[in-house]
Length: 78
Length: 432
Image (cartoon, rainbow over all chains, first blue to last red; front, side, top):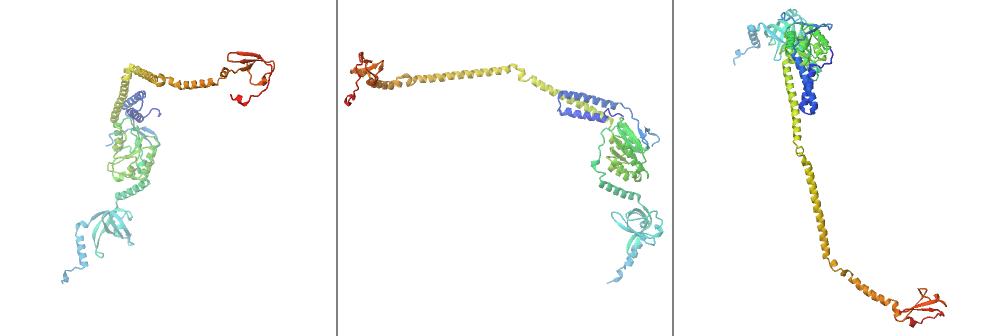
């Protein structure tokens, strides 16, 4: 896992920050447009991530710390 | 006085005992309470009181029953007893003859729960200041619960229904029985090493004994020590455990925990949509404001009427010129006035007044001067002797043979000195 790409939450946080900056109106027009472009990109990325419904596989961590895929035994449990 | 209607105490007590003994409800009583004033006689009989918040009853358990007990009672124990209630004639008090007694497990658990809760609260483990915020959008969640059962199923299905982006890590553990507490504590520690966004620890519903591991101190301390934000989800809505008090967040159920921890994908999408609208609006507003500013500038009087710039200047110059003109004419008028004034003045009109007096003085002076003129003397016959064009004032200047001329009124006499003779004028002559 490389920590380069910001997480979904970090992206949403940046987006929120930009929106409040733009709404406060304290920054100039040129910077505003730059920020706007950045925010639109962030929003699009987040949106795309949400639309791509790829089920994450559940993991199970064993006693010795080994991580394996975990499948729920759906029907046996009831 | 008829004494026969008065009872003896013995008779009353006997009557009461008869009443107690013939009441079928009192022959087999099930009673729940806490032991106090416990005394064990050497014969093996046990004497004690049973009490609860409202009342108290004396109790006796004979050795024959007592020896069948599987625990040793002591003060403070919560117990469930079966026995017969009757009156003890000698003291006139009613009491329960206990035939069977067992520990009130739940009652004892409750006491232990209250005691630990108090201790940990005093220590500050439940303090709000230690509560870590749960991330708004966690993408990696650790789940500490049994790998089978409703809890894990509910948690996983809820997480994936709401927020499929989320990765889950299950740390399987025992959730009931005597080894559960150590296992839960161990798995919390293990999960804490995984740098996850959030942990959920819990289990599904069950009896109070089943949920008990989550009331154990070791679990409470493991939760408190955990660096990762941790949510407790034990049993049902109504079940409160120590774990709930220590955890950063208490969820009513495992499903509830999943709902509280992960956001709903649809809500997020809606939120993002809202954000995009807000972005759009804010930037458009910004541009609009700038445009209005620009329009205002373009429509400004100065830009619309450029001539105004120099017309004002021109006007200013005109004003200056006008002022100058006025000033000059004023000065001219002033000068003219002065001139007129001068012209009208006495001195200018009759300047003679200035020198008339002097003229008269001069005339007088001239007369006086005329009187003093030495040449006037010549008129009276005197002559002035000269030698080499110099008036002779001293007799010593002249010697015999010098040429001397005499100025007379009509002319000069040239002569040669024959003799110089010193001779003083007498007084009378000089006075002339």
